[in-house]
Length: 407
Image 1 (cartoon, rainbow, N blue to C red):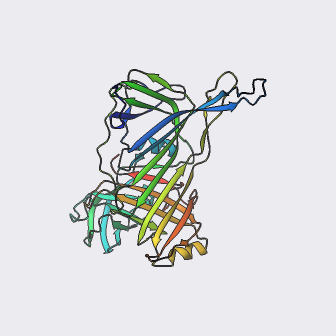
Image 2: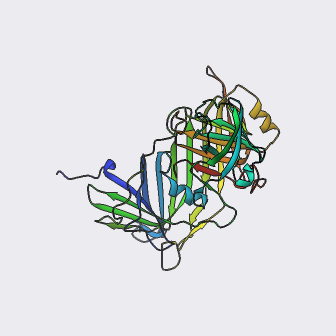
Image 3: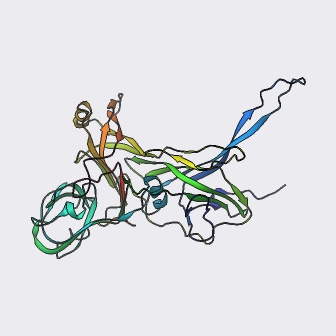
């Protein structure tokens, strides 16, 4: 008998930020997520009925605690995953810092251009190493104006930068009345005033007019996988209290359409460790883990009252063809270092981009491979709070920050 079957291409995965726990986000104000795949499940624990009875047959299982689990995979692009990133970072994206009225002198060479103003206060203004900035105002050379400039290192008066597209900066100056601004917005894990975000997810099967609604969810994990070439996969892990509503109509009213920003690319990116570019990177990944779990069932209710939340953990690996002992030396010396991954969408000077910045990591290995291949080494790492950062200092005081050019 012919019957219509739900098709994945016609499904929408929809996300909405709740005002608080126990208040599902329905109606307006939700948005459709771009995805490669999404799976949400209502999981129910069962307990075997381990008893001996005269008929010598099993008497089945008893239902127990319910929980929600979800996995969303996609391709990393600016603005697309703003809500999940804010959820796991526990802070909203905020506009970047800027320095105005700069009397700018540019100098240096490829990979280490300098932006100098002897009277400026770049650090006090809030510009950090690991940021991408643009010169947004001033009569500077056209190659400098609105060019994506990655801040390798920073002092109050000098920013040492690299262009994201390997273009040159013309030496000139001093040019009066220049503005240098951090592009887009940054979300960084805070020490205080953490947000506590709960989300509603809806799986809407438009071809069958069927809806599954999962409220009271949190973002538990996010993984970024950076290949040497191609798109950047992102994997988002979701945990919920164990509620699901099945309906024959959509709960979200006219959700905002998917973003249209281009994906960022491995070939248009680079990795800096200890303020030095690492060559011949073949892949890298960064994993954020918020250690969230359901609080557990209570007598009279199999659904958890809330979700428990632990400390934010950040770890990852870098794989590089073996051309230098620099990373080995850092590992042998147990030297804490900074690490920044910068990913652009194309080669234009004002390309869309995203960065993942960690002011303090520790390398925990340097395992090599072998065979009839280019020898490479794997460098796992663990990030930690950069307590040496903060206001008017070179780095942010955080375990991780993410910059998005299009927010």
